Image (tube, rainbow, N blue to C red):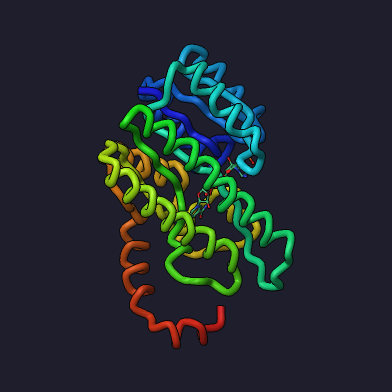
Amino acid sequence: MNIIIVGATSGLGYETAKIYLEKGYNVGLAGRRVERLSELQSLYPNTCYIEKIDVTKEESIEALESLIDQMGGMDLFFLSSGVGKQNRSLEADIEMNTVATNVEGFTRMMIFTFNYFSKREKGHIAAISSIAGTKGIGISASYSATKRFQNTYMEALEQLARGRKLDITFTDIRPGFVDTDLLADRNYPMLMNVEKTAKQIVKSIESKKRVVIVDYRYKMLVGLWRLIPKKLWVRIKL
Ligand SMILES: NC(=O)c1ccc[n+]([C@@H]2O[C@H](COP(=O)([O-])OP(=O)(O)OC[C@H]3O[C@@H](n4cnc5c(N)ncnc54)[C@H](OP(=O)(O)O)[C@@H]3O)[C@@H](O)[C@H]2O)c1
């Protein structure tokens, strides 16, 4: 099986890459800081392929195509790219960069991958969104909104695929707080270990889950969170 992971240079993408390489799959890895991937490539010279990809740039599609060509095809596309910061003061550059990566970049990757798998009439698209898309979060407006966009976009693509009778699987992974660079700026409660979370992600992808909240504690939390009435939610001070 040929797997491509975009956003593999750190955190959850990097840890899932290690698992897939250990399992013996052909794995294509991408991100902007490709130098971070050279150690993995030297450990797995025959099965690890790397390419520099910035999802916010149009030329990322050419780079993705080149990665697929080097590998002789793609069966699973896993998008782990994402940015997110708390932004209480609503600084415009943080908001716009989050939208550029998590919405524009995400959509660019999804369009290409959906069309690629449509031609083959089968494939698997997995992406890490977040539990943050459950409701709008005032101190992380762009992050929560872009993650909700990702949830909805994958749902829409699934409907498109079913309508065309394409055998494309979608897995939307929604973790709670994980100890990665993304959260390095602050202390967060219920922080999950990155290696353990990556294992759970791989398991969910292998069992072709449609939507998965990681872990069970966050699943319960999201269940309760959804019950909070809108009128009350917008009055909660975070
Ligand atoms: N950590 C958490 O608590 C948490 C919770 C829920 C969801 N998530 C989601 O999980 C995903 C992975 O995040 P992480 O926690 O593993 O954080 P991370 O260590 O910061 O990883 C983020 C990855 O995204 C890549 N990326 C960022 N901008 C990119 C761009 N323009 N083009 C290509 N790749 C880009 C980074 O690579 P380069 O910088 O090298 O390009 C890096 O590999 C994100 O979508 C995040 O929103 C994280």
